[in-house]
Image (cartoon, rainbow, N blue to C red):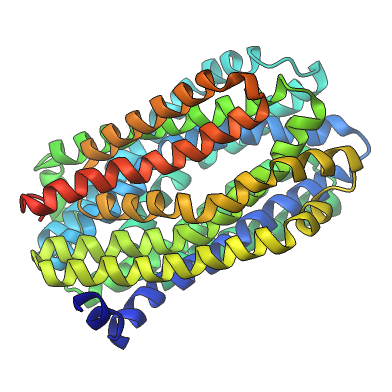
Length: 444
């Protein structure tokens, strides 16, 4: 009866959707940016330009993605300070987060020449692709201070229950990148250097917009001057560092599973690896849909934890889970009914279409199985329980490799069985930890 009472609360649904929908909309611009990048560079006279941009951007994306813990930890800690109505802590978290982001950026730029040589030495790409990949990397690396600061700024704004600013932040970044891509690469004929410079400028544009939004929030919350907080940067930062460490280790496990999925799939032949790439785009659609609700969960749970309000915590979890189920039921329907047509839209190669349709049932099952790991990630990020997230991811990653080893005779089916198990175990492990802590009243 309590669940039905929560679900009949219109204010609760409004708070969830106001946080989730803007982030879902901003996510839509991400694949659009990838398509425009590929289209602009892909129309140059040589294929190695596109290969170089793909190689260089992948190297940077993986590096920045592994530092994504800056956003997660900032969101959880900020939401808790917001819920606890602690303006001093709210301000201090932002200053600590930005200090840490700029320190990582400085270290990255210091090691940039060595990193470039080391990373590209592992690639079997042609010399032309490597040359333009390093050219892209050398320019784009200068976006590190902005890119890493944007993680913190986006997390802080979300933590203050503001999702419109992060939405516009992402949209402005991607639209700026698209416009400058076309101008620099096609209009000015700057080729790979133009594509890299467009990305750098877009990151700093997004940071400028985010800082303006932070300034407005700072004024409305009557927070202390940031200069007064510089001497207190080290106060309580140990918790921040520990949380970031645990989320970083979790991200490494996640990257290990997805990297193995790509490289092992390549060993099954060109048609299979191409089919897997098509189906992984379906997994990205699930991610884009669920990330918005995961972000909403982080902000709402963090606020409830900060306020030490068990009733608000329950309402936030039930309401966000309800909309997560709705979205994933729709995705299951779409993949089940129109999956073959979606595959045909992505690729017109008959052999790849045939292979993708063979493994499509795994993707049809994926939305309702994987939704729980997205939502529970949001719960634990909001509650800043990094060690539990790390431990749950270790269990899930171990399950991934165990299932693949046990059923390796199935070939690519074993790989997809392992991925489905991985997503399921991420949710199961966190659900078990949450259930135990909730019964023992140690979660809140």
